[in-house]
Image (cartoon, rainbow, N blue to C red; front, side, top):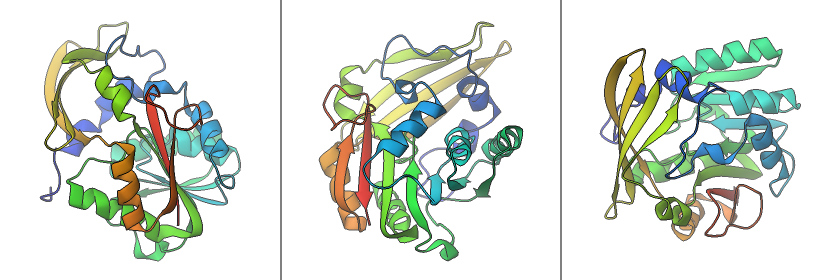
Length: 263
């Protein structure tokens, strides 16, 4: 790992992650911060993406940190030409298989959001980065990711990032929780710590699966909108605005913050 990696991503984004978060039967937490569970599923997210200000997400869309491809495949099924980039080969295999099963085409690329391909400069009409897929590096590197994102957008292109909404997230903060669970007893148990000096949310996660347990850690950056607006502006975006998960202007009660910027 390079020095700007704050945790081992390969230990986090693996088959266990898919076992819990790509399983319809998984139960969401009954307390603590709501994360991607603010949306019912990929179809609803695609509706929200298409309803954001600006043209429909096409013809060229980059799903940055696409994960296992749920949103990328849904957008492709609706006619967009989609490229999905992720650092996890485990996730990309699942994305490829699901795309084939649905009969849709997505160009899935194994890569790093910190250094996008040089040939992508000015290629995309829209970049989407969903379900808190931004903010996992040190601040200097997080800013560089925004600059890379602006580079691969055409003039007038749009970025849409879905993140935790800081006021609601901290209001519902809890020291620990069962984050998700299956009826067979498999579960993810998280212990939380928020560092106000770095605005990082630090998590110690215990994965319980098939009667065995292992522990990993991960860290993500939390943002208030004014700070992230300034970062986006510095990276080359204009008309930076924020919305909630319902597509309305952001309020303190929204669970999600969707930041939209124009190049």
